[in-house]
Structure formats: structure tokens, C-alpha cells
Length: 221
Image 1 (cartoon, rainbow, N blue to C red):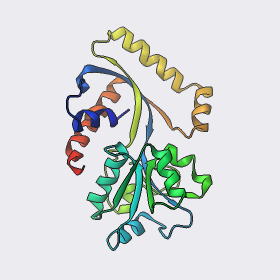
Image 2 (cartoon, rainbow, N blue to C red):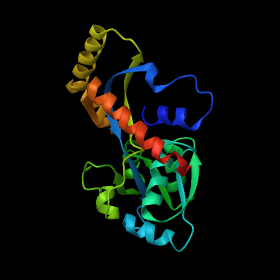
Image 3 (tube, one colour):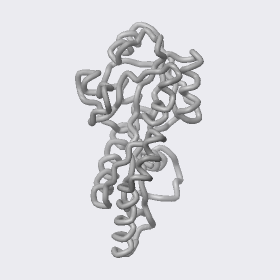
Image 4 (cartoon, rainbow, N blue to C red):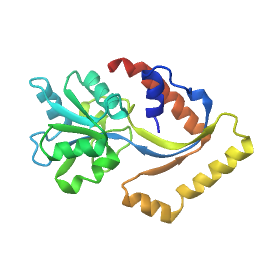
């Protein structure tokens, strides 16, 4: 899962692996970060959150500390020119529960986790993605300028470095076939997971770009 494995390497000492230790076979799913509020929240847009945060302290729940969710929120703060009090939880589920219980003003969450709870009185204000997701405003639309989707969870398959080329090709083809299987796609849809296959070359390019973004923004912690 990116950028999590990159962040572990960048932010912690004596980590016994490097990104060059792996052959990246395929990516299968991208899960962007979103801002979520309760239905009855006074915040009707991301702009409302930014405006309020400049006059009072807002408590924001999210997976953390030092998570991909927090990294995306910190970048939003930096680019949006505001600050909040980030309250870390052990997973997006618990952070969303705190929001539903009225313990915080806002929750930063993965899209898949938030989607599962929308029927429980929640709504999404913005998705930190370059790609449109339904009718949810993108970061560029909500903030009036692009914000790099550095926190988006990109999930896939890797192997130890030196995987034989024929083995990599066979694995890549097999994973692609799974990602196109109607039964698999139907189950993924039930779980609110957006499946999108990317092969080894494109996945390696994503790893390189994500590594660059994490290195550029890790000081935000």
C-alpha cells in the first residue's frame, strides 16, 4: 500500500527495507482521501471549513499519527493557509465513529471507508483526487487550486527484487484478468472499492512519483 510503505521508510529509523528491494508487479486499486462531516454540520463546503479554521480551532479526526490520511490533511492545511487540531485514531473506522458521535468537527478518511458510512448521517465535502468521483468536488474545484493527492492509498502487488521476467509477466497477466472478472468487480463494488488495474511499468512510475511527493512533504509532520 502506497504511500504507507514509503512513509515508514522516510519517517522512521532502522527500517530494514528500501523501495529498491521490490519489483512492483501491478496496482489494483486507488483510494483517495476525503473530508467528511455530519449531515447537520454547518460546513457545506471545503471553503466553509477553511474559513472557520482561520477563526477558531477545529478538531479533525483521522487515521494516524504519521499516516497517509494525516499527510494529505497536512498538505491541505499548507496549501489552504489554515491550521486545525488533528486527532489521530487507529483507523478510519474509529475516526468516522468519533465524527458520528459529535466528538470532532470533521474527519479525514479514505473514500472507501467514508462511503460505507454515508447512510449513517454523513456527507463528503471534497475528494483529494485529480479525477472526478461522482458529484464530489475535487480539491482543485474546492480550493480553487490543485492539491497533490499525496495521501491516496494505492494498493497492489509487489515481489522481492529480481523476480524473473517471465514470472513477472505471468503474475501481471493473472492480476489483470482478476481485475476484469465480473464477479470480482461486483464484490469490489459492494465493498465500495474502485478497481483500476495498472501494469508493472505504470506501477513503478507511480512508486517513483509517490516517493518524490512524500520526500517533499514529510517535513509537514
